[in-house]
Image (cartoon, rainbow, N blue to C red; front, side):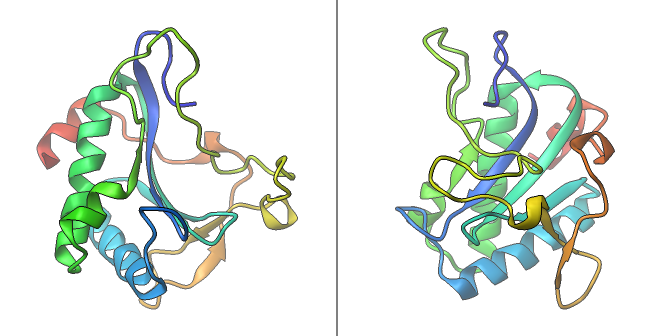
Amino acid sequence: YTLNEDSNVKWGGIDIDTHGEGKLALEQRRNIVTAYSRFCRNTELNGYIEVTKSNGIHFWIFFSEWIAAKKVKTFLRRVARYLCKGINISPELAEKIEVFPKQDQHTKKGLGNFIFLPFFGGKDKLGGGVPDNKTVFVDTERKNLEITEFKTNSLADIDTITKALKLDQYQ
């Protein structure tokens, strides 16, 4: 769950599904991975690309400090629109791509929306899980964007965005 009780987050994500309303075809997924990789390089954003347990894609950003959920949600929605526009995905489909956090504020009525973080490991109730308990990230340094194992064992080893204000310069 993304939000704390003060409606702040330490991470956000874009969920590129292989099913449901926001489903992208294989070629579209390849194109959006390339676009996100390029976006991260051009903006010097520490972004990560993860292959999900259902062969979808998660785009992640992590923060070293708590940031207002609304700010992160707005930023990631704009990123999703920007990426889709650049590879000719319709605005209607772009709006169906899931962004986490989904809420601007904690409602105090539950924990909010759920997404598996990298390294959750094991099997879930539906029988899915990370193969061999290893998260798989896309290596964005290679021109062919080969899928490789990430060389760490925990989220503590991941580079974070150190200043919340850094998001403002990309909006």
